[in-house]
Image (cartoon, rainbow, N blue to C red; front, side, top):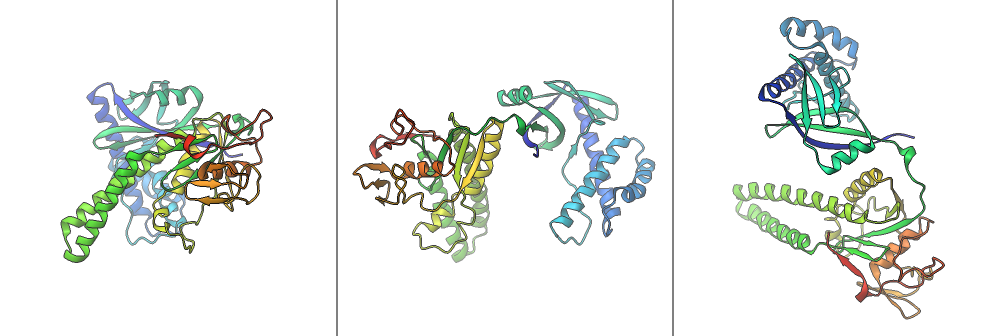
Length: 386
């Protein structure tokens, strides 16, 4: 079984300006070695570390004797890794790749753990002490997991460190309770325990951004406005950032449950299918894949699992009888026995049932024997803001 990883970024704080300058020098040296290796390796058919080392190492030592040998080795490895990625993805390049940003992947020869709050990193003047900017989540990860090979990089003129924690899957609990989640457009997530997770403020802001984008696109087509084009690019980035942030908040809210199995519909390819849905354009705006990916790695950090099931007939089935009886009309599901359910919660219960595990439901859904006997009626469902 492969080991999953959890990555957390935080600022790296130096004891003084001199230590910060020394670390930046190391980052610049690694970038110099990377670009030197790239020029030597470009056009080579074999991605051989031994061959690249024989071409570069001695020349760099003569040209820049102040660069530590381990920094040269890391630059060689980083360069070769980049070319392997290009070859694996079948990209075509017509000139040597160039590293512009400052970053270095540390290993045990370049750093040592001082405490849970600090780290010692190799510089041209020996190893210097640096501290992390601690947050409650980072402290929790330090207490639960071990970490390995952090990445030091520069962002907006500040030094940052990306810490990768090892999450051992053998320590996960057994799957014993399932929470079904029905992802949607107006209501991002409806849970089988009766929660409807929606943020009306975010929905309003998203509608405003999309209206502005349509106006700018019209101006670009008719007037060919350059300023509108620049403004449109900024709005696209803003919308993407808001969407990603909202997805993180949505995942956090879904995971506020005692269930250790989160059941989702497998919606792979739903945006590519030729459908007659009236809301097809709206569906294209929902980041189903991003929600699944973020929810999966956040669930792992809590010892939970995400399971995908087939989405067929989850909205047309009565979750009490398990039969395709009744009728869905918008936000309501009219069952054959006369009860009126919330259609999204009904669908989420059907999703959870497909996992073949006990369901996480509210007391109004389960009877004393643990069987589904009733679902929240439209007026009584819980609506919670993210």
